[in-house]
Each structure stands twice: as structure tokens, then as C-alpha cells.
Image 1 (cartoon, helix red, strand yellow):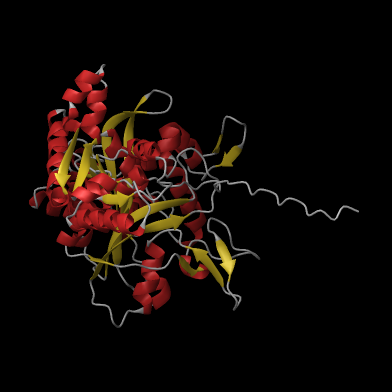
Image 2 (cartoon, one colour):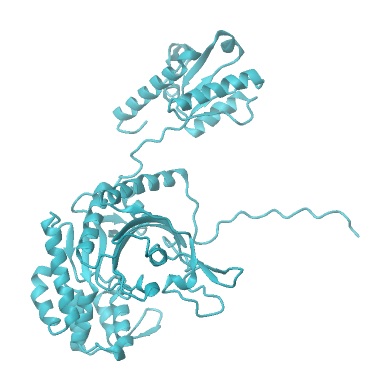
Length: 507
């Protein structure tokens, strides 16, 4: 028998499917973007709120547990008291829970914004992740559609604050009540038609994917896809289908408003929806937001199962090249609407609410396409090299590092194997350090340091081909008294910044 211990098996490093690691560049880009969004929200009088990543599963609303393990769409676990908890699916359901739980302490209207990760237990795919960031703003306790109009204006201001110019975006606005009126007008009102109405909503929601022809099939007998799978339709007749398609096909509200009003005439909910759309249009126009920025557009069909009144979507209208090399319109980067029923689930009384959500990752992709992110410089740290490892020398190196940091200069003291000095300069090169500080025993005895301009040195090394020329070009490295360290480093960093400016940002 072999008593020799088996060698422990090496663990394989692997990233879970549907999740990504974020690099320094991505993190800084998100921070830069969210800071600008936050500034707009704060100007509008909204305050921050943070809710936990986990909520009790039944609080998430749409994804209630209906089996032994309620994991349809959400990541869930059972607590030690046998209650199911789930990672939040969005930021709105946690807000509704927070408002209901703290209703007596909250000042209504309650205006708040939240940024954070949400989680979807769905099959991952290209550009489809199980964890992603959203940035939401909501007003709870404001029944009038002036709150919805303000949300649309804030969305427009946010996009412009991020550098997206007018003409490259539009905020499109619709109203769920108008569609309810259309459905009632074609004979789908009443509780007994609820299932058929839901099928109509789901068919309309496929407009972007299948186009009017595909939606017409889903509204009627049904649709067979390319694989041969058949989806049963909502069973509407041709006249009913034509009226629904007219509604979602409106592109110029002003031209179609009269016919739309006639279509929903006699339906209280439809008439109310048309009035609300007109009111929002008048409010935003009065505030200087024309149809080039905020547009009444009944073709917006996002979240029609969820929203109870106005719905709105922020769409970027410029072209980008997709992975197939095709020119396509970038499309939606966020949206929202009125959801008067969500807080009411907890309260047993009406609590009006409206809000919108920005998809941070998608918007970041758009800003990168426009060259609007990464403009703010991140200078890599000045490297204080280590020539000697005794306590006195190390103390001097650390003191220099702290002096640079105290002066607001990014700096680090080399923490690797200091005995191979060449490796320190290789590290500085790979790291992109702008300056290296060098002090050996001789310099220490004289109270001076060598300051090496690594950016200038790199440039000169490509221009100089003999030792004589190199000696003449020693401006890339100079000796300075320790007391002048901070001033000299600042001087070099300022010169490098000026070089970048002259080169248009390219070193």
C-alpha cells in the first residue's frame, strides 16, 4: 500500500458564466459617467438611497416562488428560518419595499436615486450578462403627470451632461392608458378578456424583433418561427389587428392625434391617456424641450405589462457598426414609466410612483463609441525605486513617497525584489510610470536624488543611436536636492501634460 500522500489537485481558475471582471479602465469610466449622472439628479432635488442586494423573494413581485426552489429569473437561497431570499432583479422593487416599510417616516413626494448591481438568473449570451449595473431615479407619492414630464426632462439633461448632443438622442413618450383604451375600443375590455389582453401586450412587445408583419401574425392566428416552432396568437380579427397596428405605428403624434382620439372615443381610460400625453407634451414644450428632445410616440411599448400610465424611453439615434460590420442605430439606453401598483402591493392603498432606469453598461458602450469617456487623465504613479534594503534607506524611500502623496501626486515605493534594479525600471515601463526617483548610497550621503523623466527618456531612446548623443540628452534625468523633490516632480509632470496637450492627447 502506498502511504505517500497524493499531491493536492490544482484548482482551476474560471469565471462563472454570465459574469465579468472589471478592469481599472472600466471602473474609472463607470465612475466618471455615474458622477455626471448623479450631479444632474442632485440638481433636480433627488437624494441617494441604498438598498441591500438581497430581498425576500416574495417582495420582488413578478418572480414569486411557485415551486420548491423559486429560481425562475432570480438567484435564490433559503435563510435559516426557511424564508426564501433572492438577489435583487432590479432597483425598483427594493424601493417599493423600502417606501412601504418606512412609509410613516418618509416625506412624500419621495424623490430618490439609486445606483447598483442587479442580477438575472437567465441564460447568458453575447452582451447579455447575469450581473449588471443600473442607475435609477424615482418619485413616489406624486400622482400628477407633471412628475413624468420632469423625469423625461431629467433624462434629456442627463444625456446632454454626458456629452451626447441634441440630434443624437430622443426621449420617446407613450401612455399605457391609451393602449388600454384602444383594447377596450376593439372589444377587449372587462375581466373576462384579461388573458387575451395580456397576449396582445406580449405580441406588441415583439414589434422591434418581428416588425409589423410578425406582430400581425401574433395578434391573429399565430406565428411559426424559422425553426418551425409555432406561437399561438391572440386571436384578433383583421379590423382589430389594423387598429392595434395603427396605434403602435404612429410616428408623428401631431398628425395622428385626431384619429387616435377618435379611436379611443367612448373609453374613459383611453381618453384620460390621450389627455395625459397632451399635458406632458405641453409641459415639456413650455420648458423648452421640443420634439427634437422629447417626443410623444405611441410606438413605445416597453414594459406594458408593468406600467400603469406614461412610459418613456431614452433612445440614441446615431449609427454604430455592429459585430457583423453593419451600420445600425444604437437604440435604447434606458427608460421607465409610471408604476402606481408596485408600492400598493405592500400598502393596501394607492401609492403613485414614477421613475426611470439607465442601463449603465449599455450607456457606457455608447459613450465609448462617441469618444466621450476616458477623456479625464489618470496619471500612473511616480515610482520611488529601492537601491538599499537597510532600515535607514527604506525609511528615506518611504518618506519621499509620503511627501509626494501628501502633495497630491500619485506615488508608490517599489515593493518587489529590489535587488535587481533593472527589474524596477521594467516594472515602471510596463506600469506606465511617468517618473522614477532613484537614490543610492552616494546620493543619500549628499542629500540628493536622481529624478528620471521616463516619458521623455522613452521618446529620446527612439531618437538617439550613439552614446555621445545620449550623454547630450541627459535632460531626461537630473539630480536635485531632496528638499526640492516635490517641486521638481511637479515640474516634470506639468511638462508631460503640456506635451500631451500639444499632441492632442497622444503621448
